[in-house]
Length: 254
Image (cartoon, rainbow, N blue to C red):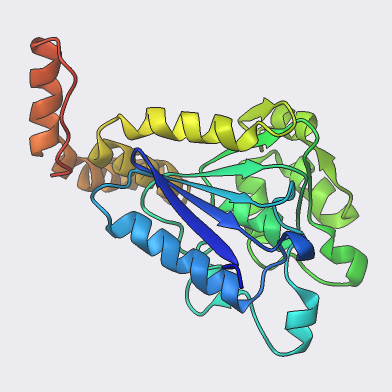
C-alpha cells in the first residue's frame, strides 16, 4: 500500500505530498501524523532549508476526511493543530503548492504555509458554515491576518470558493502559474530561498509571524532577541566575507 504522505528531498528542499488522490487528499489521522513527522524532519535537518507542501492527483486537499471522522479519527495533533502545523508551523519556510481544490482543512493548511503558489485553475474555500460548522482549524482566527478583514469574512460566512487569480489579488496567493506548474514553480522558488543564510531566513520568518502580537514599544526588544544571535553568528561573518571576496557563501547554520 502506498504511503499516504510522500516525502522527497531535492537540493535542500523537502517536498511533502499528500498522497490520497482517490479521496481528494482528505486529511485523516495517518496523513496528520506523517505531515507532522515530515516537518519535524525539516526543522531538525542541517541539510534541509525549505519545505514545499502539495497534493497528488491535481488536488491539494478537500479537507478533513469525514468518513474517518465518523470512525473517531482526527487530523489534529494535540497541542500542534491540524496535521501538526496550524498551531506550530515549522521554523523553516514552508511553501504551499496548489493544484485544484484547497478546501476547509486543506485551505487551513495553507495558512500555516509562509508562501503560496497556485495554478490558475486552483480554488480556495472554507465551506464549513454550509454544514453548520466553524473553520476552527485556523481560518476563523487567522484568515483576517492574511487578507483584508472584509475578504476574510466573505470567505468565512458565505462558504463560497475563491479563484486563484482573485486569491492573488487579495494577497492569499503569492504566485499564479499555468495548470500543472504550481509544484515546479514552488520548488524553484524554494531552491532560491535555500541559497540564503538559513539563520537569517528563520529569524526573519519568526519576526514577521510574531510581530502582530507585539506592541510597537515592546516589538523592538522582542525583535532584537531573535535577530541578535544571527548578527553574532559564523554565518553572518561568512556572508560579509564572501561578499568582500566576490564568491558564494558557504553556510554552516551557526
